[in-house]
Length: 493
Image (tube, one colour):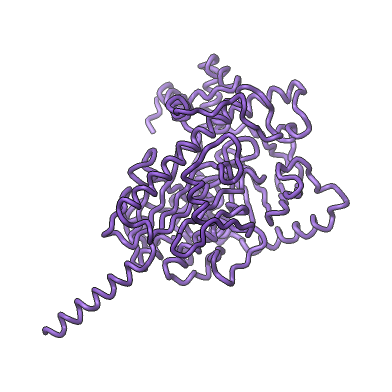
């Protein structure tokens, strides 16, 4: 009996030591943000905490999401598999449909390997608990994929007894929201809207400059939140054995950004900090997909990467990625289908619905993109230049091809230039190969119907002064207006 007790104690001790040797992992996702950080050369913004993270770790210059909209992008990362393949590619859809049984959320894999999985953090705005994936799920609880659909164990706090732990933390502040004005007003050093440098595809207008400055103010607030997370790790004595990964969940919410397959929609920041193994100050041009981050986390946890994952562990000697396959499908009321590949040097986009314009008057964007309203009017007046007009044309080109090295802002579409026929055919072929490889496992399609178009129509009729403010480039508050619409129509949900 004594020997049995000793054996049990010894086994538990060995298991505890083994668990403690596994690294903790924190995955910070800043919402709706391109590579707009100081460490990426972004002017007009100060991000000291992320600068430090980059200088002590590794910065990836060519990291891309697989979809430029939050829920499909997050779906791909939660499974480590391209969202088209898992039939999670339509925004806010299939929320009552269980995943195909061949797929498992990576948090379940981590739990099985002894990790405590944590959603959110007590120190960030709104506690950073966003999940937003397109399959049946619950925030907390067990997972079997049939009757139990929990993705995480607990909320908000990581403690020593949780080790090894994985924490997914969302920095919501960079997402469009009613807090943008308050963040700017409370900033000790708000960005000067008169001196900001705008991309050449955006019109130089005071309202657009102010909106851009507000965006940079949110980034600086978010950088402070990242600093708080690192400080907590230090204070709790867990910094040395914790991997911290920082990304954007999709591109910035502005012209050509979130929702579009151009570079500002797909390219994201990616920083990885783990001084124990990663040499400080590295910068790489290696092409990386967001699904590769998932596979890397699984690999760091000592788990064999499942075959269904389309992601690969980034630091593996076998890592091999030349292209990232991007896809844009349903976004609220806008039915869309576009596909893309990027090599970091070249960007190819195939628009299967060229009749759907970039400026499709989507209700969500009516409330959250002042630049669209300003530039839409300037387009009507013939005051946009050749780089600014394409976004407002009634049709999209069927194909787009850009040389990202010589044309990083994608101002010159080379698809119809005979000089680039060879590269066009090559990337067209690569895209078709990805189409076949990522064929959806099912055709179930259950989107959530948005009230956005009805809200915009009501606003125009019932509150013309507020509507005019929106047309003039002022954010009037989507949630506030939606609440007034529901009250007027006696809608309780």
